[in-house]
Image (cartoon, rainbow, N blue to C red; front, top):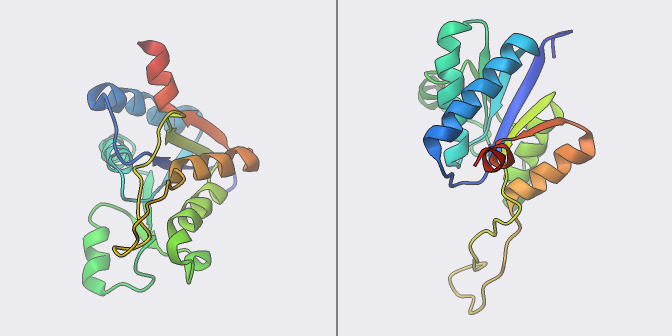
Length: 177
């Protein structure tokens, strides 16, 4: 990271509520990070409505603050074709696959999130402590299903352990109700 320039990452549950209210709140938080906290780099994952909404907000703010950078941290495809990279670079200034995520198997998203947290000064998250992911089966032949851990919860606990500044927009929205 550049001397006094700061970095922010985003992670949250796959599904979000109150999209318009959340979008307005994200706009306020992210603009404050840019203007008052000298944040110029934003790291994104994928697979959630929250990630998509954050990218949408940062992209809108990029029109006003042209110096900010959007980086897509992939959890799939360590090596990508030129065409796919060109496609990604329509929405981001950079993309990469974290070295520590290679051969991570099912933990690839956890490793990707840890990579983003390690590189960030701020984490903007959408975390509901009462959320429980849907039950799953290990494979189609399993008779029993299991209760997976929330990936957002795992990432949040890691960010807390690292001492990263966390802004949970879910709890902020609940307080305003």
